[in-house]
Length: 447
Ligand code: PA5
Image (cartoon, rainbow, N blue to C red; front, side, top):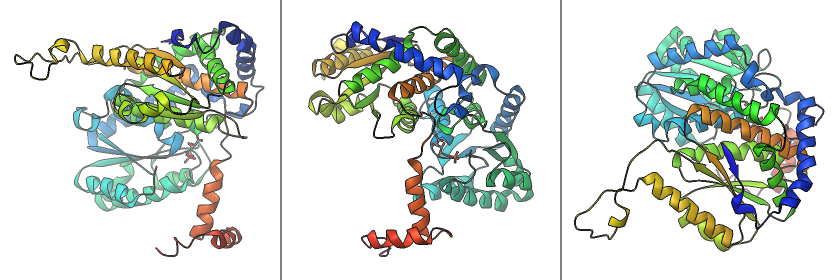
Protein backbone atom coordinates (compact mmCIF):
# COMPACT_ATOMS: atom_id res chain seq x y z
CA UNK A 1 0.00 0.00 0.00
CA UNK A 2 1.19 3.50 -0.71
CA UNK A 3 -0.09 7.01 -0.11
CA UNK A 4 0.32 8.98 -3.31
CA UNK A 5 0.22 12.71 -2.61
CA UNK A 6 1.33 13.83 -6.08
CA UNK A 7 -2.03 15.46 -6.80
CA UNK A 8 -1.97 17.39 -3.55
CA UNK A 9 1.09 19.54 -4.15
CA UNK A 10 -0.83 22.55 -5.41
CA UNK A 11 -3.00 22.56 -2.29
CA UNK A 12 -0.57 21.66 0.50
CA UNK A 13 3.11 22.60 0.52
CA UNK A 14 5.97 20.47 1.85
CA UNK A 15 6.59 23.28 4.32
CA UNK A 16 3.08 23.02 5.76
CA UNK A 17 3.42 19.26 5.98
CA UNK A 18 6.72 19.52 7.81
CA UNK A 19 5.15 22.04 10.17
CA UNK A 20 2.41 19.65 11.28
CA UNK A 21 4.73 16.65 11.42
CA UNK A 22 5.63 17.10 15.13
CA UNK A 23 1.91 17.05 15.97
CA UNK A 24 1.47 13.73 14.15
CA UNK A 25 4.51 12.25 15.82
CA UNK A 26 3.38 13.48 19.23
CA UNK A 27 -0.02 11.89 18.60
CA UNK A 28 1.59 8.54 17.77
CA UNK A 29 3.76 8.79 20.88
CA UNK A 30 0.68 9.41 23.02
CA UNK A 31 -0.96 6.38 21.51
CA UNK A 32 2.08 4.21 22.07
CA UNK A 33 2.49 5.34 25.65
CA UNK A 34 -1.22 5.18 26.39
CA UNK A 35 -1.24 8.73 27.72
CA UNK A 36 -3.90 10.19 25.42
CA UNK A 37 -7.61 10.51 26.07
CA UNK A 38 -9.55 7.26 25.82
CA UNK A 39 -6.52 5.10 26.53
CA UNK A 40 -8.78 2.41 28.00
CA UNK A 41 -9.76 1.61 24.44
CA UNK A 42 -6.51 1.14 22.60
CA UNK A 43 -6.36 -2.65 22.66
CA UNK A 44 -6.81 -2.68 18.86
CA UNK A 45 -3.19 -1.42 18.45
CA UNK A 46 -1.75 -4.84 19.26
CA UNK A 47 -4.56 -7.14 18.18
CA UNK A 48 -2.84 -8.30 14.96
CA UNK A 49 -0.02 -9.81 17.03
CA UNK A 50 -1.55 -10.49 20.42
CA UNK A 51 -4.98 -11.82 19.54
CA UNK A 52 -6.39 -14.71 21.55
CA UNK A 53 -5.18 -17.80 19.63
CA UNK A 54 -7.55 -20.17 21.39
CA UNK A 55 -10.56 -18.05 20.50
CA UNK A 56 -9.27 -17.58 16.96
CA UNK A 57 -9.21 -21.38 16.54
CA UNK A 58 -12.75 -21.57 17.93
CA UNK A 59 -13.87 -18.91 15.47
CA UNK A 60 -12.53 -21.03 12.62
CA UNK A 61 -14.27 -24.16 13.91
CA UNK A 62 -17.57 -22.32 14.35
CA UNK A 63 -17.26 -20.84 10.86
CA UNK A 64 -16.68 -24.32 9.44
CA UNK A 65 -19.75 -25.63 11.27
CA UNK A 66 -21.87 -22.78 9.92
CA UNK A 67 -20.60 -23.43 6.40
CA UNK A 68 -21.56 -27.11 6.76
CA UNK A 69 -24.97 -26.87 8.37
CA UNK A 70 -26.36 -23.55 7.13
CA UNK A 71 -27.48 -22.07 3.83
CA UNK A 72 -27.85 -18.70 5.51
CA UNK A 73 -26.00 -16.84 8.24
CA UNK A 74 -27.90 -13.97 9.83
CA UNK A 75 -25.53 -11.40 11.32
CA UNK A 76 -27.33 -9.25 13.87
CA UNK A 77 -25.55 -6.09 14.99
CA UNK A 78 -25.26 -2.37 14.43
CA UNK A 79 -22.43 0.14 13.96
CA UNK A 80 -19.11 -1.35 14.93
CA UNK A 81 -20.83 -4.66 15.55
CA UNK A 82 -21.81 -4.98 11.91
CA UNK A 83 -20.01 -2.74 9.44
CA UNK A 84 -16.53 -4.26 9.62
CA UNK A 85 -17.69 -7.79 8.86
CA UNK A 86 -19.81 -6.69 5.93
CA UNK A 87 -17.11 -4.40 4.56
CA UNK A 88 -14.55 -7.20 4.69
CA UNK A 89 -16.80 -9.83 3.14
CA UNK A 90 -17.79 -7.58 0.24
CA UNK A 91 -14.22 -6.34 -0.24
CA UNK A 92 -12.85 -9.87 -0.70
CA UNK A 93 -15.83 -11.85 -1.97
CA UNK A 94 -17.63 -9.14 -3.91
CA UNK A 95 -21.00 -7.50 -3.43
CA UNK A 96 -22.75 -10.41 -5.17
CA UNK A 97 -21.27 -13.01 -2.83
CA UNK A 98 -24.69 -14.31 -1.81
CA UNK A 99 -25.18 -15.61 -5.37
CA UNK A 100 -21.62 -16.30 -6.42
CA UNK A 101 -19.65 -17.36 -3.34
CA UNK A 102 -19.87 -21.14 -3.62
CA UNK A 103 -19.55 -23.36 -0.52
CA UNK A 104 -20.38 -20.46 1.75
CA UNK A 105 -23.68 -19.46 3.31
CA UNK A 106 -25.63 -16.49 2.07
CA UNK A 107 -25.13 -13.73 4.62
CA UNK A 108 -27.84 -11.26 5.63
CA UNK A 109 -27.51 -8.42 8.08
CA UNK A 110 -30.15 -7.14 10.43
CA UNK A 111 -30.46 -5.25 13.67
CA UNK A 112 -28.87 -2.28 11.92
CA UNK A 113 -32.27 -0.72 11.25
CA UNK A 114 -35.75 -1.00 12.74
CA UNK A 115 -37.36 -1.65 9.40
CA UNK A 116 -40.20 -4.16 9.52
CA UNK A 117 -40.00 -4.99 5.79
CA UNK A 118 -36.22 -5.55 5.99
CA UNK A 119 -36.67 -7.98 8.89
CA UNK A 120 -39.62 -9.75 7.31
CA UNK A 121 -37.60 -10.31 4.15
CA UNK A 122 -34.77 -12.02 6.00
CA UNK A 123 -37.17 -14.00 8.19
CA UNK A 124 -38.94 -15.32 5.11
CA UNK A 125 -35.61 -16.46 3.64
CA UNK A 126 -34.79 -18.22 6.91
CA UNK A 127 -38.13 -20.03 6.94
CA UNK A 128 -37.16 -21.72 3.67
CA UNK A 129 -33.49 -22.45 4.38
CA UNK A 130 -31.25 -23.77 7.11
CA UNK A 131 -29.82 -20.87 9.03
CA UNK A 132 -27.51 -19.89 11.86
CA UNK A 133 -27.39 -16.61 13.74
CA UNK A 134 -24.45 -14.56 14.94
CA UNK A 135 -25.76 -11.92 17.32
CA UNK A 136 -23.12 -9.30 18.03
CA UNK A 137 -23.35 -6.61 20.69
CA UNK A 138 -20.54 -5.50 22.95
CA UNK A 139 -22.89 -3.87 25.45
CA UNK A 140 -25.48 -6.58 24.95
CA UNK A 141 -28.23 -4.02 25.38
CA UNK A 142 -28.49 -2.15 22.06
CA UNK A 143 -32.17 -2.00 21.12
CA UNK A 144 -32.01 -2.48 17.35
CA UNK A 145 -30.11 -5.78 17.36
CA UNK A 146 -31.86 -6.99 20.53
CA UNK A 147 -35.36 -6.70 19.05
CA UNK A 148 -34.25 -8.29 15.78
CA UNK A 149 -32.64 -11.16 17.70
CA UNK A 150 -35.92 -11.91 19.50
CA UNK A 151 -37.49 -12.75 16.16
CA UNK A 152 -34.68 -14.95 14.86
CA UNK A 153 -34.32 -16.75 18.16
CA UNK A 154 -38.03 -17.54 18.16
CA UNK A 155 -37.83 -18.78 14.56
CA UNK A 156 -34.77 -20.92 15.31
CA UNK A 157 -36.52 -22.49 18.31
CA UNK A 158 -39.68 -23.11 16.30
CA UNK A 159 -37.70 -24.70 13.47
CA UNK A 160 -34.96 -26.61 15.28
CA UNK A 161 -36.35 -27.06 18.82
CA UNK A 162 -33.60 -27.73 21.35
CA UNK A 163 -31.02 -28.01 18.54
CA UNK A 164 -31.48 -24.27 17.93
CA UNK A 165 -28.77 -23.68 20.48
CA UNK A 166 -26.23 -25.26 18.11
CA UNK A 167 -27.01 -22.52 15.61
CA UNK A 168 -26.78 -19.41 17.74
CA UNK A 169 -23.44 -17.68 18.27
CA UNK A 170 -23.24 -14.65 20.55
CA UNK A 171 -20.34 -12.20 20.33
CA UNK A 172 -20.37 -9.92 23.35
CA UNK A 173 -18.58 -8.81 26.49
CA UNK A 174 -16.69 -11.61 28.23
CA UNK A 175 -18.65 -11.40 31.45
CA UNK A 176 -21.14 -8.50 31.53
CA UNK A 177 -24.43 -7.60 29.90
CA UNK A 178 -27.81 -9.09 29.12
CA UNK A 179 -26.62 -10.95 26.04
CA UNK A 180 -23.80 -12.68 27.91
CA UNK A 181 -26.08 -13.93 30.68
CA UNK A 182 -28.75 -14.90 28.14
CA UNK A 183 -26.15 -16.88 26.15
CA UNK A 184 -24.80 -18.65 29.22
CA UNK A 185 -28.30 -19.58 30.34
CA UNK A 186 -29.27 -20.94 26.91
CA UNK A 187 -25.95 -22.66 26.18
CA UNK A 188 -24.98 -20.77 23.01
CA UNK A 189 -21.36 -20.60 22.00
CA UNK A 190 -19.98 -17.16 22.87
CA UNK A 191 -17.12 -15.09 21.56
CA UNK A 192 -15.65 -12.08 23.24
CA UNK A 193 -15.29 -8.40 22.44
CA UNK A 194 -12.21 -7.40 24.45
CA UNK A 195 -12.82 -4.73 27.10
CA UNK A 196 -10.19 -2.43 25.62
CA UNK A 197 -11.49 -2.50 22.02
CA UNK A 198 -14.39 -0.22 21.09
CA UNK A 199 -17.00 -1.25 18.53
CA UNK A 200 -15.65 0.61 15.51
CA UNK A 201 -12.14 -0.74 16.12
CA UNK A 202 -13.34 -4.32 16.60
CA UNK A 203 -13.34 -5.82 13.11
CA UNK A 204 -10.22 -7.87 13.84
CA UNK A 205 -11.81 -9.47 16.93
CA UNK A 206 -14.47 -12.19 16.85
CA UNK A 207 -16.95 -9.37 16.06
CA UNK A 208 -15.71 -9.34 12.49
CA UNK A 209 -13.80 -12.58 12.29
CA UNK A 210 -16.65 -15.07 12.72
CA UNK A 211 -18.83 -13.79 9.86
CA UNK A 212 -15.74 -13.09 7.75
CA UNK A 213 -14.46 -16.65 8.22
CA UNK A 214 -17.94 -18.08 7.59
CA UNK A 215 -17.86 -16.31 4.22
CA UNK A 216 -14.67 -18.21 3.40
CA UNK A 217 -12.24 -15.31 3.73
CA UNK A 218 -8.77 -16.36 4.90
CA UNK A 219 -8.62 -14.79 8.37
CA UNK A 220 -4.99 -15.84 8.89
CA UNK A 221 -4.04 -13.74 5.86
CA UNK A 222 -6.23 -10.89 7.12
CA UNK A 223 -4.41 -10.83 10.47
CA UNK A 224 -1.03 -11.19 8.76
CA UNK A 225 -1.80 -8.15 6.59
CA UNK A 226 -2.79 -6.17 9.68
CA UNK A 227 0.36 -7.30 11.49
CA UNK A 228 2.51 -6.12 8.58
CA UNK A 229 0.77 -2.73 8.70
CA UNK A 230 1.29 -2.52 12.45
CA UNK A 231 5.00 -3.12 11.92
CA UNK A 232 5.25 -0.57 9.09
CA UNK A 233 3.14 2.25 10.47
CA UNK A 234 2.96 1.80 14.25
CA UNK A 235 6.15 0.07 15.34
CA UNK A 236 8.53 1.66 12.81
CA UNK A 237 7.19 5.17 13.48
CA UNK A 238 8.73 8.03 11.47
CA UNK A 239 6.63 10.26 9.24
CA UNK A 240 5.25 7.26 7.37
CA UNK A 241 2.25 7.15 4.99
CA UNK A 242 -0.21 6.53 7.79
CA UNK A 243 0.92 9.54 9.80
CA UNK A 244 1.08 11.63 6.65
CA UNK A 245 -2.53 10.75 5.87
CA UNK A 246 -3.56 11.83 9.39
CA UNK A 247 -1.52 15.01 9.00
CA UNK A 248 -2.95 15.89 5.58
CA UNK A 249 -6.51 15.47 6.83
CA UNK A 250 -5.90 17.96 9.62
CA UNK A 251 -4.09 20.42 7.35
CA UNK A 252 -6.93 20.34 4.86
CA UNK A 253 -9.49 20.80 7.62
CA UNK A 254 -7.59 23.82 8.91
CA UNK A 255 -7.60 25.19 5.35
CA UNK A 256 -11.41 25.08 5.30
CA UNK A 257 -11.95 21.68 3.69
CA UNK A 258 -14.50 20.33 6.14
CA UNK A 259 -15.72 17.31 4.15
CA UNK A 260 -13.60 14.30 3.25
CA UNK A 261 -14.96 12.05 0.54
CA UNK A 262 -13.70 8.49 0.28
CA UNK A 263 -13.87 7.75 -3.43
CA UNK A 264 -13.81 4.21 -4.77
CA UNK A 265 -14.26 2.80 -8.23
CA UNK A 266 -15.51 -0.66 -7.22
CA UNK A 267 -19.05 -1.39 -5.98
CA UNK A 268 -17.53 -4.13 -3.81
CA UNK A 269 -15.79 -1.42 -1.80
CA UNK A 270 -18.97 0.52 -1.02
CA UNK A 271 -19.30 -1.11 2.40
CA UNK A 272 -15.66 -0.45 3.18
CA UNK A 273 -16.59 3.21 2.84
CA UNK A 274 -19.50 2.73 5.24
CA UNK A 275 -17.13 1.18 7.78
CA UNK A 276 -14.63 4.02 7.22
CA UNK A 277 -17.38 6.64 7.69
CA UNK A 278 -18.36 5.17 11.05
CA UNK A 279 -14.73 4.91 12.13
CA UNK A 280 -13.95 8.54 11.35
CA UNK A 281 -17.38 10.04 12.05
CA UNK A 282 -17.73 8.59 15.55
CA UNK A 283 -14.07 9.12 16.37
CA UNK A 284 -13.71 12.74 15.32
CA UNK A 285 -17.14 14.33 15.12
CA UNK A 286 -17.46 15.86 18.57
CA UNK A 287 -17.05 19.14 20.47
CA UNK A 288 -17.99 21.01 17.29
CA UNK A 289 -14.92 19.62 15.54
CA UNK A 290 -13.98 17.11 12.88
CA UNK A 291 -14.17 16.43 9.18
CA UNK A 292 -17.50 15.18 7.90
CA UNK A 293 -16.75 11.77 6.34
CA UNK A 294 -18.63 11.10 3.15
CA UNK A 295 -18.25 8.58 0.34
CA UNK A 296 -18.92 7.98 -3.32
CA UNK A 297 -18.71 5.01 -5.65
CA UNK A 298 -17.63 6.04 -9.11
CA UNK A 299 -18.63 5.90 -11.96
CA UNK A 300 -22.19 5.83 -10.64
CA UNK A 301 -21.72 8.94 -8.48
CA UNK A 302 -19.92 10.81 -11.25
CA UNK A 303 -23.40 11.07 -12.71
CA UNK A 304 -24.87 12.36 -9.49
CA UNK A 305 -22.62 13.84 -6.77
CA UNK A 306 -19.88 14.37 -9.35
CA UNK A 307 -21.50 17.65 -10.33
CA UNK A 308 -21.31 18.94 -6.76
CA UNK A 309 -17.75 17.74 -6.32
CA UNK A 310 -16.69 19.49 -9.52
CA UNK A 311 -18.48 22.79 -9.00
CA UNK A 312 -20.25 23.02 -5.64
CA UNK A 313 -19.01 24.60 -2.41
CA UNK A 314 -15.23 24.31 -2.21
CA UNK A 315 -15.25 22.60 1.18
CA UNK A 316 -14.31 19.15 -0.05
CA UNK A 317 -11.30 16.97 -0.47
CA UNK A 318 -11.12 13.40 -1.68
CA UNK A 319 -9.23 10.34 -0.56
CA UNK A 320 -9.26 8.02 -3.54
CA UNK A 321 -8.80 4.28 -3.20
CA UNK A 322 -6.72 3.27 -6.21
CA UNK A 323 -7.21 -0.48 -6.44
CA UNK A 324 -4.38 -2.11 -8.40
CA UNK A 325 -6.13 -5.33 -9.36
CA UNK A 326 -9.85 -5.82 -9.09
CA UNK A 327 -9.58 -9.59 -9.62
CA UNK A 328 -11.16 -9.52 -13.07
CA UNK A 329 -9.58 -9.69 -16.54
CA UNK A 330 -12.80 -8.92 -18.35
CA UNK A 331 -12.15 -6.90 -21.51
CA UNK A 332 -14.31 -4.79 -23.83
CA UNK A 333 -15.42 -6.93 -26.76
CA UNK A 334 -14.85 -6.19 -30.47
CA UNK A 335 -17.89 -5.51 -32.65
CA UNK A 336 -17.50 -5.98 -36.41
CA UNK A 337 -20.13 -3.34 -37.17
CA UNK A 338 -18.80 -0.84 -34.63
CA UNK A 339 -22.31 0.58 -34.56
CA UNK A 340 -21.64 2.29 -31.21
CA UNK A 341 -18.22 3.58 -32.29
CA UNK A 342 -16.55 1.95 -29.29
CA UNK A 343 -14.06 -0.30 -31.06
CA UNK A 344 -11.27 2.01 -29.91
CA UNK A 345 -11.84 0.39 -26.51
CA UNK A 346 -11.94 -3.21 -27.78
CA UNK A 347 -9.41 -5.45 -26.07
CA UNK A 348 -8.86 -3.07 -23.15
CA UNK A 349 -9.68 -4.62 -19.80
CA UNK A 350 -12.35 -3.01 -17.67
CA UNK A 351 -9.63 -2.48 -15.04
CA UNK A 352 -7.69 -0.36 -17.55
CA UNK A 353 -10.74 1.69 -18.53
CA UNK A 354 -11.78 2.08 -14.89
CA UNK A 355 -8.30 3.27 -13.93
CA UNK A 356 -8.34 5.76 -16.79
CA UNK A 357 -11.68 7.04 -15.50
CA UNK A 358 -10.06 7.42 -12.09
CA UNK A 359 -7.07 9.41 -13.37
CA UNK A 360 -9.33 11.55 -15.58
CA UNK A 361 -11.56 12.27 -12.59
CA UNK A 362 -8.69 13.09 -10.25
CA UNK A 363 -7.37 15.59 -12.80
CA UNK A 364 -10.80 17.13 -13.33
CA UNK A 365 -11.57 17.38 -9.62
CA UNK A 366 -8.19 18.87 -8.71
CA UNK A 367 -8.67 21.38 -11.55
CA UNK A 368 -12.00 22.16 -9.91
CA UNK A 369 -10.27 22.98 -6.61
CA UNK A 370 -10.77 19.67 -4.82
CA UNK A 371 -7.56 18.30 -3.31
CA UNK A 372 -7.11 14.57 -4.02
CA UNK A 373 -5.06 12.16 -1.97
CA UNK A 374 -4.62 8.69 -3.44
CA UNK A 375 -4.26 5.51 -1.45
CA UNK A 376 -2.86 2.74 -3.61
CA UNK A 377 -4.18 -0.66 -2.56
CA UNK A 378 -2.66 -3.56 -4.53
CA UNK A 379 -5.63 -5.91 -4.71
CA UNK A 380 -8.71 -7.30 -2.98
CA UNK A 381 -6.89 -10.01 -1.05
CA UNK A 382 -7.51 -10.62 2.64
CA UNK A 383 -3.92 -9.55 3.36
CA UNK A 384 -4.33 -6.19 1.60
CA UNK A 385 -7.58 -5.67 3.45
CA UNK A 386 -5.88 -6.37 6.78
CA UNK A 387 -3.28 -3.76 5.96
CA UNK A 388 -5.91 -1.25 4.91
CA UNK A 389 -7.98 -1.78 8.06
CA UNK A 390 -5.01 -1.22 10.34
CA UNK A 391 -3.85 1.77 8.29
CA UNK A 392 -7.23 3.48 8.66
CA UNK A 393 -7.60 2.63 12.36
CA UNK A 394 -4.17 3.96 13.25
CA UNK A 395 -4.56 7.05 11.08
CA UNK A 396 -7.92 7.72 12.72
CA UNK A 397 -6.50 7.58 16.23
CA UNK A 398 -3.53 9.79 15.29
CA UNK A 399 -5.77 12.21 13.41
CA UNK A 400 -8.17 12.44 16.36
CA UNK A 401 -5.34 13.29 18.73
CA UNK A 402 -4.02 15.94 16.33
CA UNK A 403 -7.54 17.35 16.21
CA UNK A 404 -7.68 17.41 19.99
CA UNK A 405 -10.55 14.99 20.65
CA UNK A 406 -10.91 11.62 22.31
CA UNK A 407 -11.11 9.31 19.27
CA UNK A 408 -12.44 6.37 21.28
CA UNK A 409 -15.73 7.56 22.72
CA UNK A 410 -19.08 8.40 21.11
CA UNK A 411 -21.07 10.40 23.66
CA UNK A 412 -23.32 11.88 20.98
CA UNK A 413 -24.86 8.52 20.11
CA UNK A 414 -26.75 8.53 23.42
CA UNK A 415 -28.96 11.52 22.61
CA UNK A 416 -31.27 9.78 20.16
CA UNK A 417 -31.39 6.65 22.33
CA UNK A 418 -32.70 8.55 25.36
CA UNK A 419 -35.37 10.26 23.29
CA UNK A 420 -36.40 7.02 21.64
CA UNK A 421 -36.69 5.20 24.97
CA UNK A 422 -38.69 8.08 26.43
CA UNK A 423 -41.08 8.16 23.48
CA UNK A 424 -41.48 4.38 23.50
CA UNK A 425 -42.37 4.46 27.20
CA UNK A 426 -39.35 2.70 28.67
CA UNK A 427 -39.68 2.69 32.46
CA UNK A 428 -37.51 5.38 34.04
CA UNK A 429 -37.84 7.81 31.14
CA UNK A 430 -41.30 9.21 31.99
CA UNK A 431 -40.29 12.80 32.63
CA UNK A 432 -38.24 13.12 29.46
CA UNK A 433 -41.15 11.49 27.61
CA UNK A 434 -43.54 14.18 28.83
CA UNK A 435 -41.24 17.05 27.87
CA UNK A 436 -40.58 15.58 24.41
CA UNK A 437 -44.29 15.02 23.87
CA UNK A 438 -44.89 18.75 24.30
CA UNK A 439 -42.37 19.49 21.54
CA UNK A 440 -43.67 16.92 19.06
CA UNK A 441 -45.72 17.77 16.01
CA UNK A 442 -48.23 15.00 16.63
CA UNK A 443 -46.97 12.73 13.88
CA UNK A 444 -46.35 9.86 16.30
CA UNK A 445 -49.85 10.05 17.67
CA UNK A 446 -51.24 9.76 14.16
CA UNK A 447 -49.72 6.28 13.66
O1 PA5 B 1 -18.28 2.13 17.74
C1 PA5 B 1 -19.10 1.87 18.60
O2 PA5 B 1 -18.77 1.64 19.76
C2 PA5 B 1 -20.57 1.79 18.26
O3 PA5 B 1 -20.80 2.02 16.93
C3 PA5 B 1 -21.12 0.42 18.61
O4 PA5 B 1 -20.38 -0.54 17.90
C4 PA5 B 1 -22.59 0.29 18.28
O5 PA5 B 1 -23.29 1.30 18.94
C5 PA5 B 1 -23.11 -1.06 18.71
O6 PA5 B 1 -22.95 -1.24 20.08
P1 PA5 B 1 -23.04 -2.66 20.73
O7 PA5 B 1 -22.01 -3.52 20.13
O8 PA5 B 1 -22.82 -2.43 22.19
O9 PA5 B 1 -24.43 -3.20 20.45
